[in-house]
Length: 105
Image (cartoon, rainbow, N blue to C red; front, side, top):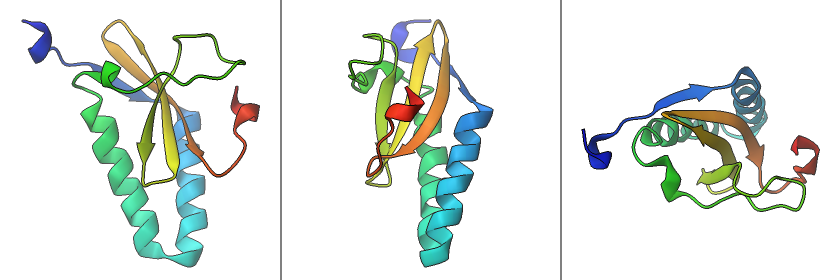
């Protein structure tokens, strides 16, 4: 199997799942359709990480070890934060870019 055919296993942490639920609940108070769009886009983007997850940039922050986490923008304002270990992609967080997320680090 060459690298173009390689498929990664994607695992969403419980914490990332709870973050997605929290963001969706908040959005649903304003627009149910926006909440469903967030969930749908999350599912689509998470699934896309099965192929070439290294395509996204590193999350660069002085508090994060260099080269540990990558980030993927979803729904214009949320970051899907993940790391790649071997053949597995671990989605560790879904954060709102409009908020300070240093607490996560």
